[in-house]
Amino acid sequence: MRDAEDDVRRRVREGDRAAFAQLYEEFARAVYNHGLRLTGDWSTAEEIMSETFLTAWRTRARVHEDGGSLLPWLLGIATHKADNARRGQRRRQLFLARQPQPPAEEDFAPRTVGRIDDARRLRAVHAALGRLRRQEREVLALCVWSGLDYQQTAEALGIAVGTVRSRLSRARRKLARLAEEDREPPVTRGEMTSAAAIAALPAREELT
Image (cartoon, rainbow, N blue to C red):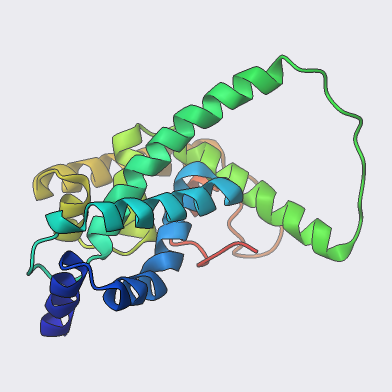
């Protein structure tokens, strides 16, 4: 497995388009989901995914020929893109907040209702994550949601493994405290309703 991953690294580094297409097929969804978890917006996540692979292609010469999976490298790029996108979102939100509100139009089609429910859940989880420091949120997203180990997360963010451990520990403690503060009566036995508690768990691969 490691030899195959190193072969892909070498081919990507050399500009092999077939190898890069293979990289996209294997990791595009993971990059998209990471962007979605960090920004809470489907269209922004799509932009992050596109920009991540464009940047990866442009900077492919920086890839080391050995080191295993390229997913940490891609998620590291996506993390920076998401941080930029979040700043852009804040600027747009400030602008829109000053504009008059359009009249509400209700659509009760089942598919639309399902989309609204997913969007509400995503916003709630994203709001909980937003109460963490950016560095804690990024480590949580990479370790808990994207499944990277400590070493891979350290590689993605360019920090020490010990820093990953300490940031993740702080993030978990904060979310546990927020989950306790935001505890709601369960609708059914065993149902978890706190957004902070949900944010600390792996999510569905994609909300659709």
